[in-house]
Image 1 (tube, rainbow, N blue to C red):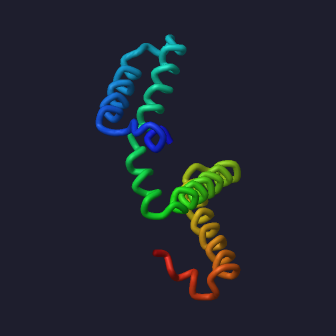
Image 2 (tube, one colour; image 1 turned 180 degrees about the vertical axis):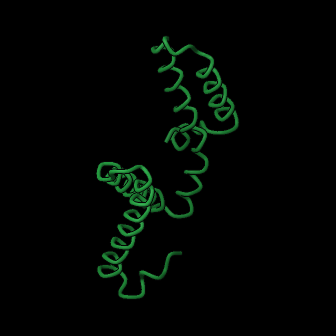
Length: 125
């Protein structure tokens, strides 16, 4: 967002992100306020660094950003649900992957029924 508004992202913000991350690692754990400030600065610089990539994605297809966000939120929800339900740790990964895959297929099926007919589920372009 900062790159789109202010043209701020690039190599300098990438170097600043790496610098603040290394600085964060050198601060002792009991200085929580300073560590939180450095973490926020690293997150700001990282977000500004991926600005050119997001700008390119918007130029290619504006709906790509929203669909990526929805897919990420769906996968996060599936893994969170698997973490709440799993009794053993080794089933957590299996449950998260299977539920993510099944929910993606379910949403593709709903979208193909509404928008694209029966063959739209096979067009992943």
